[in-house]
Amino acid sequence: MGKHQGTHHFCNSCGIATHTHVRRPDAGEEYVMVQVASLDDLPVDDLLAAPLTIVDGLHDQWSDVPAQISHL
View 1 (cartoon, rainbow, N blue to C red):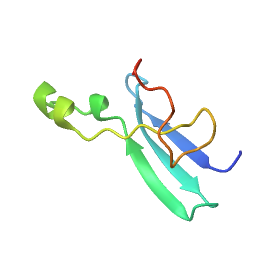
View 2: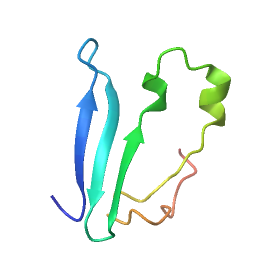
View 3: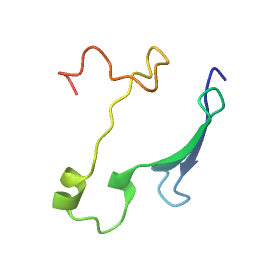
View 4: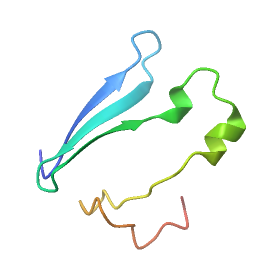
């Protein structure tokens, strides 16, 4: 599965992606990515204020920001 392994989790009721558990053995990292938009009762202002990390998954450069992000 490349340099990283991810296990995707979904809501049993509606099927929305809720979070992903990622393991990156090459970097010695393990973390969980939470889809904050899937959280119930999350105020929109809190969602907009949440930190955002953009990484270059297309080129498997998970520690780098992509060269082009103006469309995001």
